[in-house]
Image (cartoon, rainbow, N blue to C red; front, side):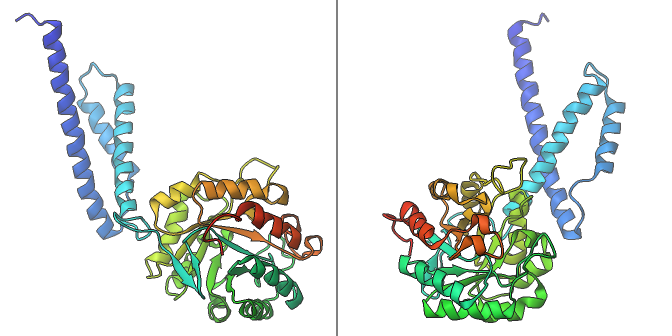
Length: 356
């Protein structure tokens, strides 16, 4: 029988369909293997098994495909299988948006987080009652409902100001109550849980503690929201897995905070990853806020970056405010003064609904 171009093409089409069926069957088998591995807590990737399969294929190969071509082809097939395993695992996360999930909205002392653009603002470090009072009074006049401030400060240098501890928490709570504001403050250690819980309305987990899994698990048992900041070297997948530590313990009141990541750029303190905002909102139902102060480290570009964050879908912004930034005990270059926060609010929020 003489083969024609058309008949050969028909055979190629049939071979393509066989390859497709075989690949899909392989992925179905991979899914079954994943389920068994999950029950036994085995690792998904086994380089030993991959090497064994490649050796078997090399021995079985009769050509015309070369050994290098075969190895390259099946490396891609193995990678597809592993990616498929991981994708199925991600779909099972508590933090993942399920079909029909609506965006989460949390009410905290009468202020709603996740519904319309919100501003979370206050001093980097609590230094005195007078300092907190000046800031809170100005913010309350603008309609801001969330007062942030650090009483425990994780600092790169052990000789830098580390915060006032419980005295700072008391100041923050006292001032917030006077102005009908909710407190957002950072918790650094599991040993501080009971203390911080007495004073705060929202637990903040800073960038360095995104990997503090014992702290995350403890906060997963708390009865109030957890504002989780992305680690400055973390991928979005790692960020969501950190949030999973909170969610799997039962606390689904999570706020995801993009605060910039470390890159080679030196004109800003960090590089604000605006693409993270829509990606996180698609992947999860949790509110996404952006820390403009840490994301930029400079006050002169905060307005355009804040506008960009809101345009990308952020449901809140976080900025640091100090009556006299030049005298601040920490992060003075990125804190707005009282006149600047007025101008910032007017430029970013005026004319928008839901910002109070």
